[in-house]
Image (cartoon, rainbow, N blue to C red; front, side, top):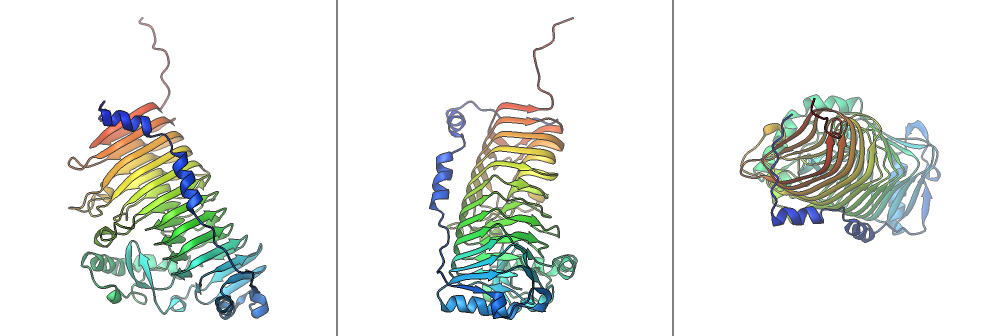
Length: 449
């Protein structure tokens, strides 16, 4: 067990200790500021337009026609009844539209990459660029929703899955363009670069609702909330176990509520991001902020993650009343490195039940040991009322830099029943522990023999 904790009893420490209670009033104010979308009364059923739920016929033209009719009527609801609807290409939203998948309905997307051309403006691992269209894509829209008890199937397990081994060239080029400030119009990828599209992306949108639908088999990230605000994600479920199948990725996002979600995906459940490296640091006016995650069931790689692409900053994140329904590698994971810059601050996590993990709570400023020159600021993080049955590696890890220490970390009422390593804390200031138990609780000392 490696323990190096810096417990400094100063006024600032005392103030943080006294004021790090979970800020329920702040959470309430964020939730109250989020607006649900509103829609005109117009409705159109895709079957009445000619779509066939036979899993074979191409229904994309009829979904496109439904969207065009909604636009003509200033919005409305597109109803998808029971059946399996095969789409050779993406769904592109317009404003004021609710795409409603009734119980027993499934949208099954083609896995032919050419079906997602022409390219659209999007983002890939924190860098803005032109690439294949996300399968469901909304750009610059207001009042949009994806609702109902149906399923969205991205068919990501074959062709798209094969892209993973071939993405290196495109990935490295995108990062070079980011670092070199290449004009956005020249960042064109698509065919030959093997950068997989997101399943669902809302980009520069406002007043968004995703409710009750099931997400399966995504090519890449499942639900990407990019430069959007006033967002409600609730009651959805997952079975998406391909490479990089993050569940929900808020990026440069503001005022987000994620609740009552049942995760089962092949990467992070919730991954809060804010751009990468030079490009992200140029957008510090739009950090990801005011994000509430509550009453969720975690299953996948990690539960809630901040980073590692967070260069514009992440602040005011509130996670509460969540539990695992299976193994996680890490429960709560804050990660950045010396390429990123930016900040992570004002993170409050409480009432989390974890079963078996590799690491329970992990904060690192040196993710993958990469980068130089742009160390991030990590401060004001509170963990309380957290239980974990077993950590096969470490219970609690905090890793800062000697010249950029992690500051103001509060750990209150933490119980980890078993851990190979209890606590590893390096280059941290004002780390406060209260009622922290790792391993068996000590009781009354035994008497001398």
